[in-house]
Image (cartoon, rainbow, N blue to C red; front, side, top):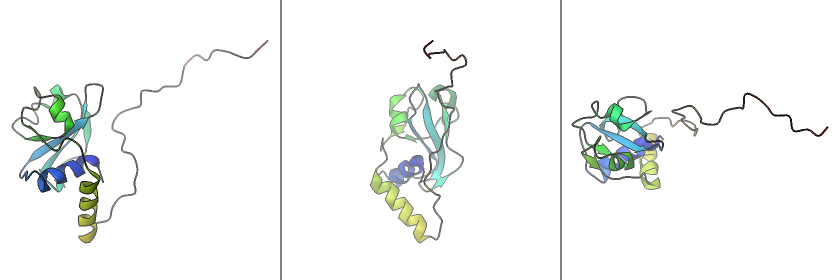
Length: 129
């Protein structure tokens, strides 16, 4: 289960959030991981990573749940909680999906940006003569 989905589910269950909204978590490097939701159970697109200023216009007028929203109040003026996903929310959402006959994906990381680490281009010889 995607962490963003767990946050959206918690916002609907615990926070009573209905209707369209977005979830944004801190991705470091002055970016957020984010996704749009039609309701607490329905993501309307794939998760993405962007700078808050780059998506502020796209999410204007929508409540935004999560720590990413709280970190960037200029971009997300209608920031709401919860800020972090709980194991209980993830488990409840998984149980609900399983009970509805939906299949859960295998646990695997979802990489939304290229890694910072790179293979050096010019190797330095360090063997003794």
